[in-house]
Length: 559
Image (cartoon, rainbow, N blue to C red):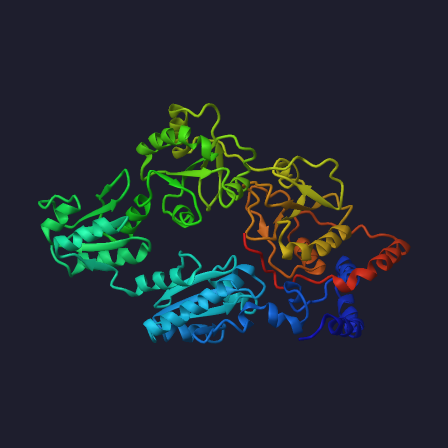
């Protein structure tokens, strides 16, 4: 690996030639930026992603730990990815980053699952991994937004892995994908064991246990990972599952050991429709949010949710009301209870939604797609919550967005944006605006900060241009949605009604300047400092140059 010091030497040796080429350009401002930013924008060979030297990296890299046997995990790259998938029908792929803590935690379970599946299904399924920091184009092709991202390919077609990140969950999930999908129930004894032994089950009453309807049911079972599917042609078995033996076939029911025990499917006998029915109805009227139930809530085809936040000792007062409200909205809205004083779930979820204090709160949430939130005003009565839910279903509510207080003053080179002043500053039609959305804990954002500050310093004094940043963990706005951290968006003057442009180049002063210059609606010239001031400024900043590195590969931390 070429060190930053070697690159600095190469750049210094090459600079006369570079300057000669650049002199031919008509953009004197670009010449100035390159001349003054050269030392700041040295490539860093992605070393900013890691801590320590090359010598100690192997110890911190989970994929080099000696106690993890990765014999059965295949390392894929852009060069062998397509050939590997075409040679196997079932392939699980983990897109990871060596520095990612979640990937490090997954590594031993993933390797153990690969070993067990190799014994169970030799040459039928393979577990593999791709270093997304080395094969960024491949990761982008499959819309990898965070790490780890796990996809399961069947005949080259990817499906999101929705299970837990444990050996047992991975093995069980894949076994279901490889299994028959649907099980035959031919006797009353078999049916009774299912009814007494399983919390939830799907049964189809068919004319035949093979053929088109059976195949469609098996396809539906592979789309729903958490419930077993059964089929029967025996009227006595159907009767145990509360199906009228004289009912028209095919018939499908979902049976649960809960207050609402039976749900009858009345739609078209089609795999995707049956799977959506099961996914939408498998949850109880009120689902208590836990680590285990989270995926079934947020991956549910019903995206709209009503959430009740209450401390444990007050839940008995409000849960009966909440449950009564939920009944007419079954299959339309999800109703979720969040125990506010549960440190594992309640606290972080409340923080995400911007809820402070212990007061009982009801809010509506549109799901992860557009993440709009709506808070209930007024008393926690049955009628008030029911009207709130109905208005939410009919899109009559006004969304709420988190915001820190508007900063005073706000006259630094990088303007501070919060939810409450974004309209005023970012959406000002008379300004071209570059906005970085960051997270305080994000390592990539921390690495970008000195470069972003230098860009703003070079562009200070240009009235038509604003360089700004917003903490995306404490502020929200529908026109500034982060796609991981950091996300850099550009809002051209006079075009604020359009979606902003995303900067996806190398995060250097020069590249960001070129991007702004190309897309700014209002032409501008740099306000350069006088030569003596510039020399003083460069001398003061020279001591910190070696430690500042370009973000280069444009990766984002997980949301």
